[in-house]
Amino acid sequence: MLGQYATTLTFIALGAIFAYSFYAVLIAGQLSLGQAGFAALAAFSGAYLAPAPADVGDVPSLLIAVAIGMSVGALGAVVLGLPTMHLRGVFLAIATLGFAEAVRVVLLNQEWTGGAQGLGVPRVLTVGMAWTALALVAYWFWRMGRSRYGRALEAIREDELAARSMGIDVGRHRLSAFITAGAVAGLYGVLYAYYVRLIAPNDFDFVAAVEGLVTAVVGGSTMFLGPLLGSGFQTIVPEIQRAVGVEAGWIRPFLASLLLLVVILFLPGGLASLIPRRTRMPSGPADDDATGLAGRRHPEAGQPVVTLSGLGKEYGGVHAVRGVDLEIRAGEVVGLIGPNGAGKTTLVNMISGLVPPSSGSATVLGTTVGSTPVHRIAAAGVSRTFQHSKLFNRLSALENVLVGAHLVSRPTFLRRLFWLPSARRDEQAALRQAARCLERVGLSELAANRAESLSYGDQRRLEIARALASDPSLLILDEPAAGMNHVEAARLSELIRSLARDGLTILFIEHNVGMVLQTCTRVVVLNFGEVIASGVPDEVAADPAVIEAYLGSAEEDADGTGARAGATAAGAGDAPPDAVANLRPGASGTLDTPDATRDAT
Image (cartoon, rainbow, N blue to C red; front, top):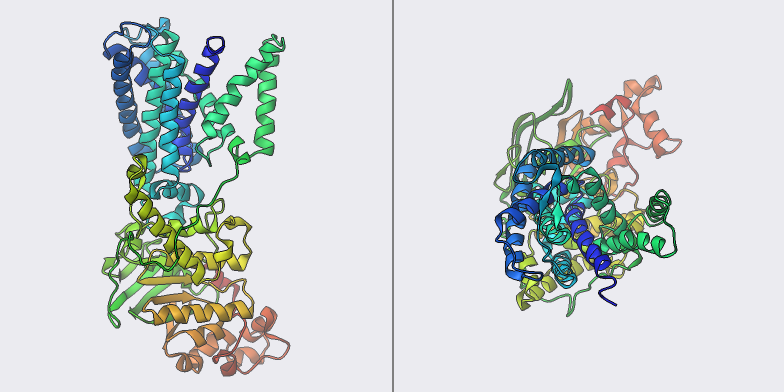
């Protein structure tokens, strides 16, 4: 029975291995078609350089060829990956496809490859050997999925900017995924060569690359079983058509394409999406100590955390931020307020390293901003949320927070391959850290829910939990109460105060001025990119420059064109309140600029 279906089973295994080379980069959000080139280089190099096998099943000769092929494939990935890692999406696909086609053309014009006639290779591979190789590849990706490395790749796929702010070195992780894809493609090329007996450069053309990509996409890139499911689907469908007597050449590809379209339309996550994704919960009490997590040294109370000197940012002729001098010391809760377009988000983006300053200097936790990559500033102890929620939507709430713990958790992938107990201990420590952070923001019961399924308010709290997971020294919150009602905002205010009592330094932007004045130890007011006031809440609330920035001057109000009308339109009510009373602690609502031109900054 096995002999009857040996060829089909072998091609399922080979197709799955090739699909895994695409899966390796798809899980990191990369669209590459260069794997056909890696496979071609590996196939011809392995077959040409390895000693001739004695017979079918000659394992030593095959292993030598595999080692050569995987090395060549990985080396080719490095050569291609280094100059193309800055490319994304279709641009990366075109660049890698060009590489694969260049490899094919070069091999086609070499004498030692046999040119268009191909190179004869003895058959060595058996169905058992093919499936053993597939099992090893699948095992690699299975053990990678629950590791810190695997979570980092998934985070990059979901939102690269958020991943950088969590301390993940995106470039290094993308390149490592590319090298893995090259090695796996090299394995496929050698195994394919030692099974089909005759290989030609055209066996690794554009059609082969597309088939490998389609197999991976049909199977799904969110679970390690996806390539195997996709290969089975792509290989068995033509066999079923042949078994029922469909021999017309155009009918078979038509039916296969139709079934493929059905899968893409109704199962956008691939066949693997039919298998429920289980969220692993921590074992043991959530209040265990942090053994297994990397320690972080925090600054002493009163020490400078952020020092800005003449900091500015220009976009063409627009000055978003100009000449900001600011110092934030450990233990402070600093509120950054100002009308819309005042430059608040631009300022915190510079502090966190997302935007380089145009002028001035900034030092954050001993790190110079502007010349330092985002992930290194995060590693120094800066964690943040975003004005518009940047969660990893296809991951659960707990998995989102686990990504946040990237900097304080330890690498486990290689140890997981060998089932070392220390890997499990470190993973459990990271899980307990994530569970503690979820409990801190009141989301413990939603740990297994996908981030995209949470309400807007819960998503904002989840972002805070993820930011806390890295045990930061400086926490930056960009409009954390947006979308929350007054009860949720009050709870958030208490959470921020409790974090400050624990010694955390907090800088946050918020339009709910009442919440800011109740929560902060110091308030900084920006207007048109400049600091117009800074001090304790009561002083800032009574500052005439602040009142004018929000509610306009008396002269403007006299002719009805001032900001007071804008504030009323924004929801301040029919009768404008007293300016000072509106800014005192306990006031609610948002403060919006009446001047539409400020949105430009």
